Image (cartoon, rainbow, N blue to C red):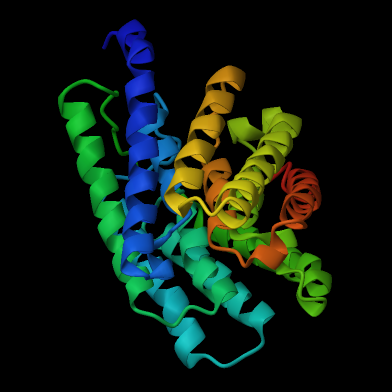
Length: 310
């Protein structure tokens, strides 16, 4: 595989990612179905399309099934499990840990797919259907990119999990997350723990993660993505009344330029970028600050507590 050629055509993969986000938001705006907007799609395009090497050990069937199942589980929790929000979120978090272990994969974006409808109190079946359709588009486009040599072929190697270690890891993650979440959930400031930040928290719990070596860059990247999404949403969509898809496209362009500049393709940054597009406008001013504080607390806590786990 000619890696020089792949680097030259990375701009095309960025364009595909922007078009995917644009398509999703356009459909949502024209149909009036806000639940179609799934911020994790931007994370998937970064990992499955833009990155030279997919960051997750998974295959296309697992991407489709796990994303769809996680989204459906989140909606089912909102509809039928009437318990306090913090327990709903912990239930979703624990469930995703279970199915990740069961399917021998580290495809952690499903955490955000499962928890987001709980945060938004989404009961519509449109959300899981949208996630399933968008996931199909992602994996089909990835197949075409691999077939026509726009990106390297993703080779799936199942994760070799030690069950005892996984039980300890996820129990520890759940306990620590639950303790950290007490104050934000009690004060109704849940976006200090926005779903992509929980994905980041889980990623940093892996001592072998390359992202841990760029801790400060990633905290800055997550904050920058949140600020960019909020600023463009407020100025273009709310103040100037531009369509939301214009904000989305411009936000993706800015983020992709930043990713290319700093040479870090961290998928949760794509998801945090698009969350302001679905937030109530009253949350926009505080959201970047919340993301920064949450990123600092979660990242340092995860790195400190999971430095020896293998």
